[in-house]
Length: 251
Figure 1: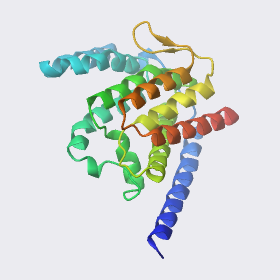
Figure 2: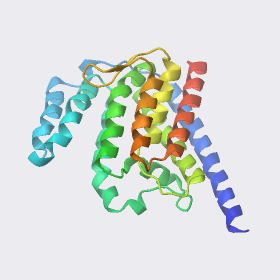
Figure 3: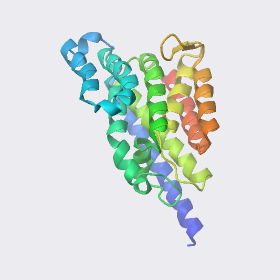
Figure 4: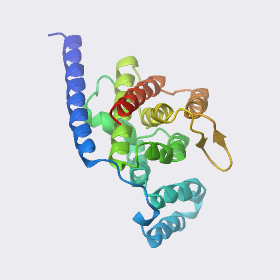
């Protein structure tokens, strides 16, 4: 077999494995059913400990951490623990991935299930991770509510959209790709399917009248900086649309 045939066989196997895993995950999540968001789920002392994390950050980096702390702790207080874990995981992996991006990025040559998860936790620079995580926090609680506050389902949706975004980027681009843009795009598109007329509270007093307007705004901001993988946005968004549509059928 030539190299192109080997790649096609590998790509086909990846898709089959992912579909089988998705079907198994859907069965488990359907059996577990939704859970109700509740402020009583986490104690006030835990939430206050979360808010005090800003004082553990070195002073010279506090201006970077401050925009995250209150939205992050609010999601924890409201019971959206999956969002909390996603943001913490991205922040924890930021410096290790930045120091060795070649081992975290996704490309056609490095296409594997492991990389399709790892690349979602790596970011190219500080504005990259800040933009993705703040956007996720802005829309995540709305998506969680639309999913009946089923945090496992939200986590599965996020990772599946990121998987699809990375797969699309690897197949449609020769560049190496990192970042959670595919995951975040998929979550936003999913919300536009689940709650098409829902206004999205962003930051401060700013609102987007429709989830897709938020996606278009963030995508426009990303593209204006250059070096952005539109392929990852496309793949993640398509996955979010299909998965949310399937959820409306079974829900």
